[in-house]
Structures are given as C-alpha cells and as structure tokens.
Amino acid sequence: MNGRKREVARRLFAYEFNRSAHKIESAEERSPTYILTPTGVRCNRVFVVGVLLDREETKPDTNFWRIRLSDPTGVFTGYVGRFQPDALETLLEVEPPELIAVVAKVRHFEGETRSFVSLRPENIAVVDSDVRDYWVYETARLTLERIKAMESKEEEDVLLAWQVYNPDLEEYRSVVKQALQTVIEGAVEVRGEKEEDKEEKWEEEEEKQLEEEFEFEEEEWDLSDILGE
Image (tube, rainbow, N blue to C red; front, side, top):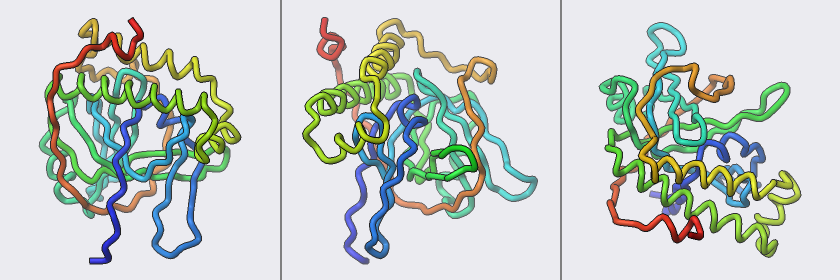
C-alpha cells in the first residue's frame, strides 16, 4: 500500500456539479485531480443519491454503461464498466426508475466548445426515500455553509471560485430551497420519463477503478434551521 489517504466524498447537488468546469491539477506524480465548484470546494470524489432514470450500454456487447441519476435540482451523468465489477453487478440488477446512492470519482473532460463533468461510480447501492431525504438535507446544509464561506472571501479556493465563476450566490440559495421543498412536501418521486429531466449531452470516454464500501446513518432533523424559519 502507498499510504495515500482516500479523498473525502463531497455532497453536491446536480445543479452545482454540472456547472463545475474548472480542473485543478498538481505537478506532483500520482497526485489527485480535482474539480472546483462554483461554491468554492474542490472535489475528487462525490456522494450522491437520486433516482436512476436509465442505463444504456454505450455500444453493443461492451459492458460499458451510461447512467443518468436525478436529484431535485438536475441530472448527473455517469459511466460504469468492467473495472468496477461490484458497481456494475449492482447496476445490472436494478431496474429504473429506482432510488440509488453512488460514491464516485469525478471525471472531467474538455470538449471542443466547453468542459464536461461526469461520475465514475465506485459503489452503487439501492436505498429508500429516508436515505434520499437525509442526503438532500445534508447536501443543502453543506451547500449553505459553502455559500457563507464564499461571502467571507477568505479561503484560497473561495477566492479562486470567485475568479473563475463569479457566482450568483442567491441563485445557489434558491437551488437549496428548491431541493428542501421537495423534502418538506414529500414531492420527490421516482420518475423515469426523460422529458421531465433537465439534461445535457455528455462525452463517453471513461476508465474505472473500484474502491470502498459505504454506510448510511438515518437521523431525525429539523429543516427550519437551514431554511432560516
């Protein structure tokens, strides 16, 4: 073993993830690559929960699958292949639409006209609505913490995010409220209709690595603390 510490799996809504186009690389050999998000956090791995809308083999008999995963704010795109046998096995046992949780590496791709990000799943698990709702709550809380850090303009990554994205923080607060409202109203449903998704086209080249297992903890929570009510 090389003793390298595993990167933290960050919680991000799809809305922010899909707008994270800035890549951070180190000159050091075998150093991880990160994306910088508009709220000023660098990510190498993410933890997301949502509805598996569909899975599609990119080419016949390749066993390389493109997936789309929906949370209350948008749609993640990811790719699963033979180098992740556990994730692939779980994926092929799931019939969309289904709630799943995914721990994934972040993939960054430079297209001709813009940058793209996608998921490289390490682990996939079928979950229930309680796990999904708790993920929405925690992701909302952490997003608001990052927004506050952006307002302070003190940290290095925060300053870089301002320089790269110059984000409208009220826009991201609105996204958080939108996501929380789905928990309050119980409005997040398992849906498979493509026409209801806000999606973009993604490039298809991916390589895979399999890593860790993960657990979920269910808790009671009060949404008023992060809604400011």
